[in-house]
Length: 281
Length: 310
Image (cartoon, rainbow over all chains, first blue to last red; front, side, top):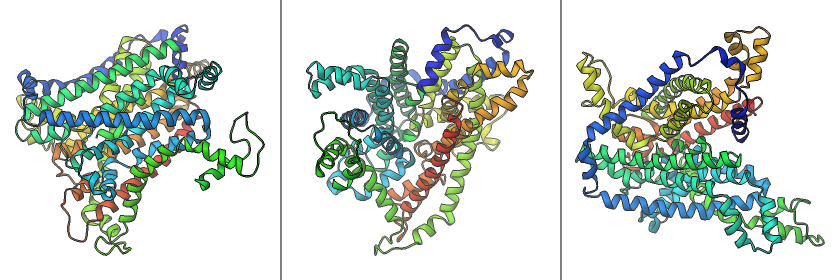
């Protein structure tokens, strides 16, 4: 991936390719992209029309809305803190001390994609002790597993773009302890990767429906579906709100990550690592 | 701990320049200390992924009442409505990987041929990233507002004399779900196929042109074969993405279509016949096995694709 993007960057400054001279924006390309745009924009427009502007104001006053949103936000905080506390030290440690484990870690972090959320939650509810099953925060603990592939890929890409060994050696030769090296040298250099891992985790938790609905807790997406029985327009408005918030998050990483990657010449965040794939579906 | 330490104790495995004389237990101890840093991660994985997965694998072969080994769960899961579920899920996944695969290929090519850095290209790539993340509950509601019985597009189509619901379309059946899946599968395809297009070096095209090849010959002999492993790999990813999807179909149809993921979910909702409590686990095991096989093929295709795309 990194190679491909730097290739692109190199080409951007290179003179235009000779074969491009003979084709200047052919019509077919515009037709394809236009049709695509129509297909993707009509449902958005229809939902806006169906919800109506008034519903957006109404959403916040509905019964259950604030409880559901607060539960989702709490889960997002728990998941993000746990994911970071687990993945950041582990990934840095593996890069520094156990580089041979990187391939193993990569395969393990792919596992949550092989085991779909609907299957994983069956297993979790089977083995979880009663005191965990009776609290919604069990979901937060399991979401850490769902977030792992994305968190790991972001952090791994960020670390690979760093001269980690050199940074750590420099810091320790200047007398920094490992904590201060981590806090003042490595983490600031990983800002983009940390941001993207955080945003992906938060977006994932806020959108997760499968596990929450099967565990019978009313998180925000579960509430949206349940509330549809009462008012379709309000549910549609809530869906649109959820989408816009997620998009803002994603655009944030794409723009911040893109700018940094251009400045440093490395490819820290690519759009593929921004894709949550099956976890929310 | 000691078992884990064994491989790390091999000479040269620990790159610590200040190492003292190596007596028998010393490197082993240090290896153990080195591995200690990854213990929290592995413990967490074991607790929340390993044990639940094992519970499913074991439960699939267990009689729910006696706990005895049995193949009856597997038998039930591969017959009747559950076999039908696997077939329907496979059918849906094939449709929603091949159609978006071809659309995404076309759109990806349109983006690829646009000038690098052009505004159109940037918008298209960002939009793909955004729409590929679109799924689950909100997407279902968008389509209900668009193509539901009272949806806007339904209204438009009826106004021009084509009521989709009188012509065999139904948003709440398999065809409807497939249509909704296209909405996130197409941009996902665009995103994952673009790197493959970017890997086609202009020099190859120039070399082909210098030797007198036309556009068709270039794609037939060079571009196509280079892209093919990536394209097939992308199809597998799309297939997996559709195969394990649950939320969109559940929110759209309230669980009325017989997809395997929804059938597994219904075991948790308590719609279970006596003695069949473990069939859900057998279904889950089946799903995991199918996706695992896909991932193996995907890894093989990726390796093949990597030969050219560096």
